Amino acid sequence: MNTLQKVKVLGIRNLTESTYVLRTTRNNFEFVPGQCVNIGLVGGAVNREYSTYSSVNQKKYLEFLIKKVDGGLVSVGVSTLKPGNEVTLDGAYGRFVIEKPNSTQKYIFIASGTGIAPFHSYVKSYPGVDYQVLHGIRTASEQYDRKDYENNRYISCISGGVGGDFSGRVTDYLKSVILSKNAIYYLCGNHGMINDVYDILRTSKVNGSNIFTEVFF
Image (cartoon, rainbow, N blue to C red; front, side, top):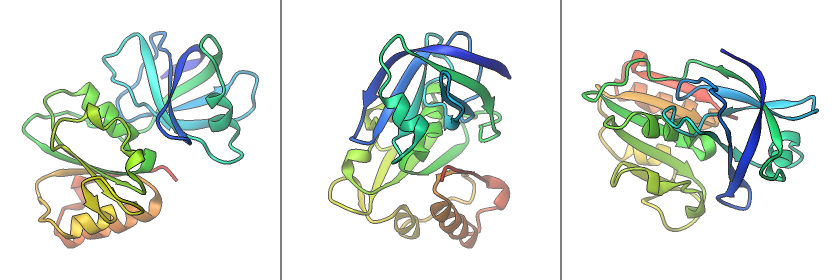
């Protein structure tokens, strides 16, 4: 595990009015794709956990997918920083990782909102992995960096508008398809989605040992 350190902000890339990608220098910061990092403002007393968004193979920078929360000291404060400003990093933590990425194993990554962050890191870090991303979002504007996923491997499930690949919640999509009992399922996002998806998978006879979860909010 790394020690608490300061890194420089390289840029803020806005994806929607409320969601952005923070890019910082890496400074040899070590992590495993899927782990979380505590990010804080320099001189501040508060930090928040965010999953790594960038590839572990990218040595020059780190990226984090962040959604601004009303009144959020870190998410709002970081969004106003300029290149050259600093933030603090502490970590990395967590076991929401792929222990031994296997090109012969099918992985299903199921996310809601910014819960897609660790899956983006998986995909960028492990080329050749056989994966499918199912992304539950409200509007088409939330298809964060869709271009980074291979054709037909990203499916957006849109519950509050038009566009995307499927009209409805990600749970509705799962109920409409045949689920593989041999795939490994990773679930990340809000607790309601995770609980509902877990029940759907178990009802479809997916072994509990093939399901991994990470609650974002």
